[in-house]
Image 1 (tube, rainbow, N blue to C red):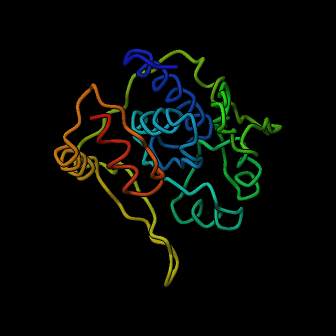
Image 2 (image 1 turned 60 degrees about the vertical axis):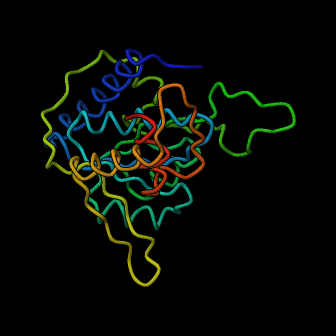
Length: 219
């Protein structure tokens, strides 16, 4: 199903409120780092809503690969100082084992329907037992919309990590200004319009998928 721009904005604001309430309850300063840890899958909009909600909060998005095991996830939590995360339901147990403080859990297969001849992937449609104050994405989206935090072009926007082939992964710090410059460059290269339909095959946790498959399509 499709979302209007108004519905898209309302969902972003509602999720922002859930993340902000957690930060205040834990005596955290509004902002910090928020991890996004689930695949594009069939419901890519969960990734989009989570990213924009984090930016509304004034937080930095740290996109992580859904293939991470608990030990690897734990490294990124410590290195990036991640406080909250929006995670796929199938990855929730790993996130908790890694020490994630607060999780908003998204079942990316919720409501998905198989196409004839193309079965849905196994292992994604799960309902984990949530701990503490963790919530499902559906519950978080029922909150009243909240106003945005003040963010400037020079504030950090996203911090993807290198692969760590020859050493430990390193966070690459990008401001809203540098992301915008890349998005406009990619948009000029693609030359898409509002009438186009984009196939987002590249993972959003990778900079190419984030800029070319996601952000340039939304500009």
